[in-house]
Image (cartoon, rainbow, N blue to C red; front, side):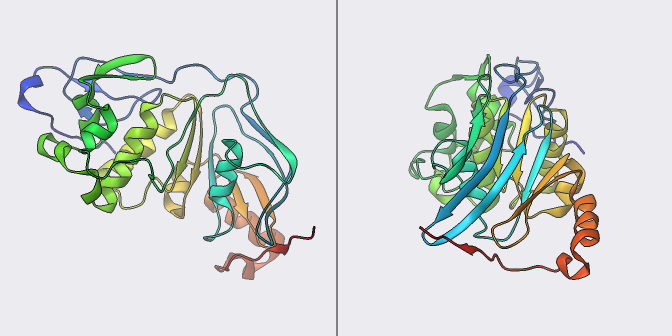
Length: 277
């Protein structure tokens, strides 16, 4: 599925294929063919060894070990409050492990924008938020027109001047994607990227992730999205325990039922082990 967006008439004669490694499928006008992550991943992306992480008197993550694949798309699933965003912040070094370790490879450059978007000035236009007011911006290793880049995420001429504080849910999520991909990382950490996206943008995101030459880790409640793109699943299974699985969401669900019984497929609230000090 390809999401197509029109750009301003002043640049009508040229095509730009925005690319997050292989292709971001929204064709707009411009003068750049593509852009790619800043560097290739080495052998180590992220390794978690016996990670334990608590919050207040609860253990969110208990004895978690996994190794991120170099070219994988990992879906992280679990109920609200399970510790998904805490895991991201631990990978980023914003939170410290209570025990165990998380090792990030030397060649890794992480692209991540906090879901709360706390650093965004609501009075600035969305174009200013992305471009810092510059006509040309660097995306990965490529310099490109800032308005063309913003257009790739569905923001046509006048839309680029909207104050960031009045954007709809879908617009905020597209802005978040633009800010994340602008960083040019080879490891993408995406927190609920499909929320409120229109069908065309969702299809473009799926295609871009499938052709991204780095690694992507995606927190999502969208099982259909994870069925289409995920190569691995990291799932919260209750009592602070997580399960690492190679395959998409549907395959994981089948595996979970075979291991834990049919009742395991029903939605459950997050449950935790108490933290003892």
